Amino acid sequence: MKKRIVFLCTGNSCRSQMADGFANKYLKDFSISSAGTHPEEVNQNAINVMKKIGINISNNQSDKIDLSQLNNFDYIITLCGDAKDNCLNLLEHKDKHIHWNIEDPAKFDNLSKEEINLKYAKVRDNILNKILLFKEDLFK
Image (cartoon, rainbow, N blue to C red; front, side, top):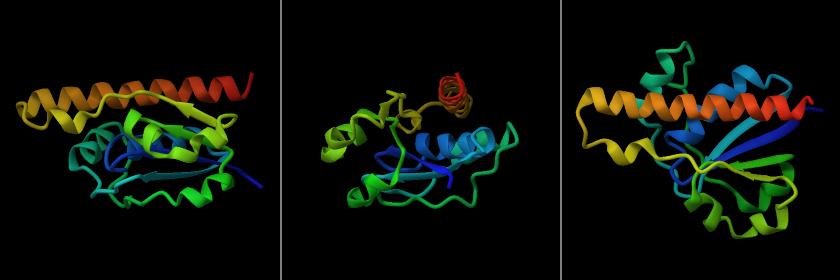
């Protein structure tokens, strides 16, 4: 049976969706999920920036985390402080909880289109690096 990973964010619209896309590509031996504490529609800028590197997340859906289901995951990875702080029972899962404090690119949607693309690409690349380091740590 495959080990299960869930990526958590507030909206499950940007960071956790990108992490989901990368994990499905690079962590084939795992069952991957993503969810949010307050889900929103998958962010079009996140879809676009992932598409630029050949990963399609356009069919992804935002899901609300069911806190009673956290026991079903082998790894719980939060990508923002809000999700970490609002999933109160993460303390019960400290042995399998990992926190990556990743900047929210959606907070910068008031910039120029070029600046927005750069911000999303920077966040995307940061998440990719975290995924690859996580994979490396798993198989040491």
